[in-house]
Image (cartoon, rainbow, N blue to C red):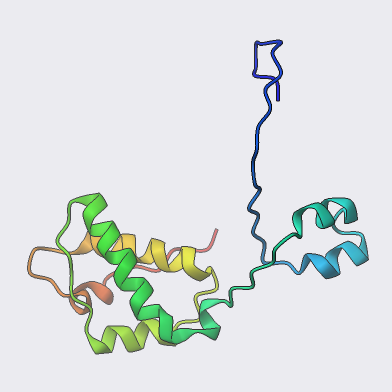
Length: 130
């Protein structure tokens, strides 16, 4: 590469990690995605199922995201009871892990020093559609 404002060429060694929710193997056949780019990117494929296909992971992931959010926002670390875990697992999470992480942020910001997640769970508004 040539850094901006320079004439010196520098060699770099890099890996590209790309993610999509589209099956690119089928998209390139329809002409929606460049075939040459697909073959350059498709060295290793990891298929990670959406949360709705692995609901058992949701409480663990939510606890992780909630702990990280509490640390980031300087909030107390909350406990998650079984009723909240069940409720979390009943949601489809169309935004997948990103939606779950953002929800954990909203919950962490709404917690007081003695609150459990169940105390604020019902009070956290769902985002409005844009």
